[in-house]
Structure formats: structure tokens, C-alpha cells
Image (cartoon, rainbow, N blue to C red):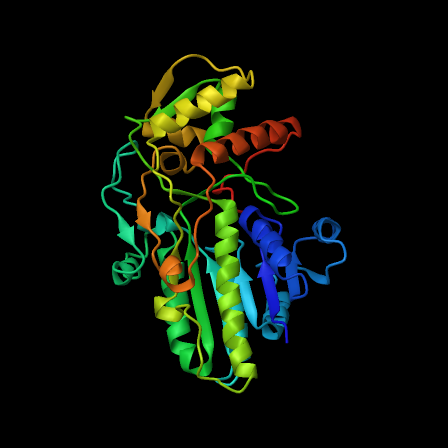
Length: 362
């Protein structure tokens, strides 16, 4: 019996790429996506002709739709706004209410490794430490609720622990900066630093420009989420076969926390912008010489989260998904991902698209 999957966020960058990867690997699975309007629904259906994909109109702010659809699903993917309290709580409650020890239900949540950002670190500085999703997990889940994403992550883990005996399984996927061009039917991504270099017509960093923010390609994120869905389905199949105690290698609930990391040596931001500068000039994109060093206030004037996007530092190690599920990052280089983004940004600007104020995942 194929699993019944509910996916929220299919119109977005990561959610759309995950839908593409999921349907490519499992075109016969029963997948329902919640989208905002009929226009998005039509675009998604047109992108996957011949695949029995269901679309439902709704958002994280339509509890009736969330409750109805989550109650039907064996695996729910919340890949939209990871900090949406009401929508996430509604999904979890609906899933828990329809879960029994004999029939487990799974909830996979897209968060972000900004949870462990050192917010006291001066923008433009190197990372103050590295975080590991195995040896540092207890510390990660005990961070102050004021840390980005931390309050939501702690709520999910706590809810999963409370309902674990009744068959609820939760997992949190936490990537660093997600780069490259997405494969979804609608949003392909938003390269904020590239975009702002084009607008300013000059490369820039914040402070000393020594910050390093780990990156992972969007295809790798999508494939990692699919690997976790496959692990959940493997467990469901053993239950259907009459062995409810069997499990996969995946970790869930209080251990179900997965950083995603590439095999790249993360460049400092000065190296990154100089590489972008060179690639842009090869495409005759007008840029002045040199690199500006912005103050934190100047970075914030470019984007509300400018000190993080342009000046933040993050170093993580995603061991759990590699050790438990055998996931591997692709061989795509960060320079190749940057080149993809520049090409996409040129096309995006030619279409007159405007960047939002989030982190480009919506």
C-alpha cells in the first residue's frame, strides 16, 4: 500500500524541489499538496502530467483544511513557514488525534540551522564554534527560546515525546544556507547577496568579511527529506505486514533532529563575493571595481536580516542523516551553485520579480 503524503509548501523553493524529487522517485505514491490558489494548483498539475497528484486550496492559516488533510495522511511534510505557530500546532494536533500505536503517523518539519547562530558575534566575523547534530543535540534543544527557530523546534520535540507512545513520530530537518536553483514548478530560489550586488553594482561584505556560513544545495535538501520519507514509509510497511514494533534506521522525536551539510569547504564571504564578481563580469553584468565593507546598519538597510544573510557565520556538522540513512551530498561545487544562482537571478530580474523579506524559502 503506497503511503498517503501531505505536503505543505509545494509552491516554494525547498518545498517545490522536494515535491519534484519525491515524484521523480515515487510517481505512484498518493501525494496531496496544499496551495494558496487555483493558479498555483494548475501550475503544479501542468508540471507533472500523468501523475495522480492531488491539490487542495488552503494555507497555514486555514485550520479546517489543515485538520481535514492531516487527519488523512500517514506522512505530513511542513515545508512552508517553519515558524508559523498556529499552522504547525494545528497540524500536530490533527495528526496526533488520528494516531494509534498500531498505526503510526509521521510529521517532518523544515526548520533551519540559524537556530545555533551566535547572535552576539560581530557581523563579518568567523564562526565562534561548530555544532554537531549528534553530540550537541541536547544543547541545541536547550537553547534559549529567543534563538531563531528554537521555540518552534522545542515545541515539536516536546509534542512528539508526549505522543510517542501513541504512535506519533516527528523529525526536524535543519539545513544551513540553501543555495542553487530549485527544481520545483514555481519558485526557483532567491540569491539575496547576488541580487543586492546587481542592484548596488558593486560587491560588498559586512565588517571584515571573514564570516563563513555553511551551505547546502537545494537538491541535496530535497533528497534528504525524501530519504526521511522513505524511512517513514519503510516503517509503515512493516506495520502493515503485522510487525508494529519494527523500525528503520531513522531517528524520530527527541533524536529526530537532522542538520544537512555539504562536503564543501565553506568560503569566507570575501572569497564568495569576489567569485561572484568574477562570474558576473564574465556575463557582462556591470559592476564597479573593489569590495565595499558595510556597517551592520548599512547591511540592515539592504535587508531586514542583512547582518545574518550578508554578515552571519555558521558552522555545523550533519552526522545523523549520514550515519542513520546513508545520505550523501551531491558532487556539485559551491562555485557551480553560485553560477546557477547568477543565471537565475538575471532571468528573475528580467521577469520583474521582487525579492521578499524572508530567507527565500517561502
